[in-house]
Length: 414
Image (cartoon, rainbow, N blue to C red):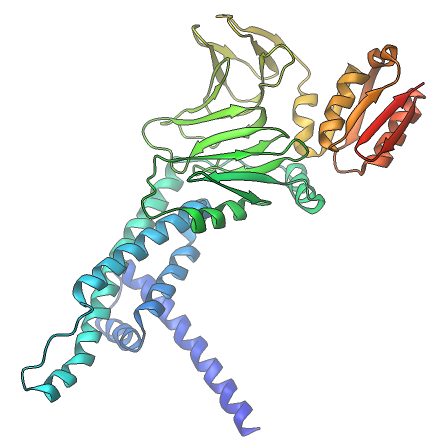
């Protein structure tokens, strides 16, 4: 019983010390410590190792409210930069080879603890300065960028994608492909695979499989939903006065508003420049065209060799290879946004088109026993996260066709 009480007492005391340390560190970074508080902070720091100090400072940085809007991958990279600079300072002031004695061994021994105390205090000042810079960066970041707000329907779809195992992709970092199933996985892969020589200008590429999708957040807070068979190339950090990415496939963009830096998507047939909005881009058209559908806000599209044309909400622009002018028309945007909320919407499409989508999604090869049934028309909605058998039964009820699933094949006949 005495031992348990002693352990409880130690635990409570440790928690109180840690709480006090965080409070003092916050006030120190803000320049609000009085003399008594500074002495208290020094006493706590003097008993800590360099590693413990960096750990507490790092935890404080990750928890600071001003940094809440910054993507986790960016925060981690900034923190890694701090640790590297602190370590460099520590090495500079603490040579690995001890100085040779000069006959005053006892005096040298008594000076070692003082040297360590001064070194830790010096590192505290260095770390605090770096953290102040980062907190300032976070406040600047938050003041100029308005992160997109996702609806409850979209958030539920993200959760279903993860639960169903469909949220899968491969991120290529420094030439190394790494499989990931969440954007936290990208941050971890980046921390493990990025070399110290990595610069902010280096690009990353995320590629989805032909039977999966992927949700991710870019450094500026822009949310991107990649459809199956899609590749997005983007920088770790957006530098300069624009934010630019490259897309092959289909993606839906919820763009973070930043009036000083337009968001630009490069596609094989032209560029899409946004001015604070959300839109869908698909480069997988049968004739090689790029289709852009504007849901909210305003965007400009520039075909290869052409000039910029502005789009209004509910507009669809078709950029065709070799054409300097886009074809723009008003459309029902529902089929282009429903896949973000877990639904495939088909409007008077052929059965062949429908099964091409489902074949990719379920990783099956579709075979028609009669070419005539390929042209049957279909209108309806299909739950993306439903298993294949209930989906095929639903299509059978609507069309009256015989649909069999045999291994990797879907066979459709009269």
